[in-house]
Image (tube, rainbow, N blue to C red; front, side, top):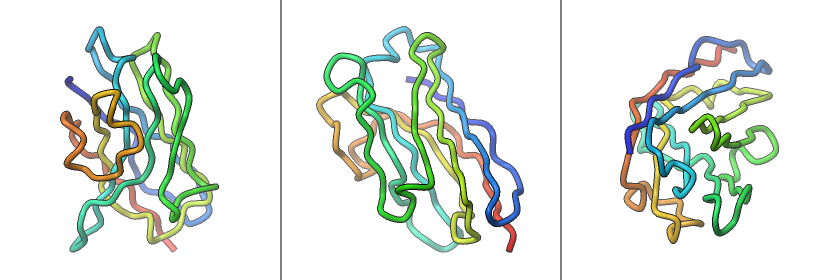
Length: 127
């Protein structure tokens, strides 16, 4: 699955950004889709994921650090997954990457469970 992320940028603390990740894969709707991030000098960490169309449509799960501030959603007609980020904090600064996993991986938070990755998009939150 080829994925293309976009939407990163510079924003002040408390602001919002929406990231997008698009694919040309015709079976896009059958994958679990997730967002991960990697801050400078830190390991990649799970941010959020959303279930595939067959099993747990619309079901989402988040890391504790973003729960209540970020919202993941998908539009299968547009082959796109989104990450709406509100109330951004300087500690949210990172390169954000989208990823796809097989449907049975729903619930996974380890990057090793996701098979396909898009290139990252940089989000910088200034204080």
